[in-house]
Image (tube, rainbow, N blue to C red; front, side, top):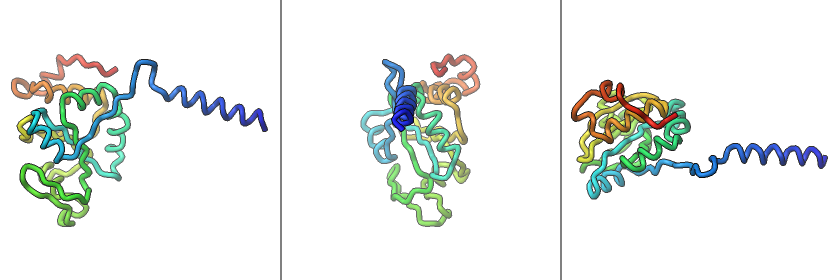
Length: 179
């Protein structure tokens, strides 16, 4: 009995140690804002807004959260170069954005009115939405992205490269930090 307890303790201890970040590598988490908070912040201190449009039932949305947004490089870019927003596309909250009120009144099934407006009736999850620092919609990028694929995408918008070249041109010469 004592031997089994000791074995269990050792296994739990080893697993706990393995799951800790390496020494000197603190786990960076994305500081998510509501859309209203991001709009207010961008008005006071201009930075682009990034919106992760998700649903609770979407498995690709969950993978985006656990695999991509948990990556320290991606979290750092989102935290320092954007006002990141996590928006539940089927949420029930009333949201005021750019002077307009949006609700989820059941008109679009479970989908929030703001989702339909932001995604221009091309509703799919996850969808990544990019606004410039003037809170003007730049584009919507549908689908899951790995950290390696997300880094050039975020950098393309944070660097304002879209003003002078296509994403493909930018990505062809992009040297990222994600391993």
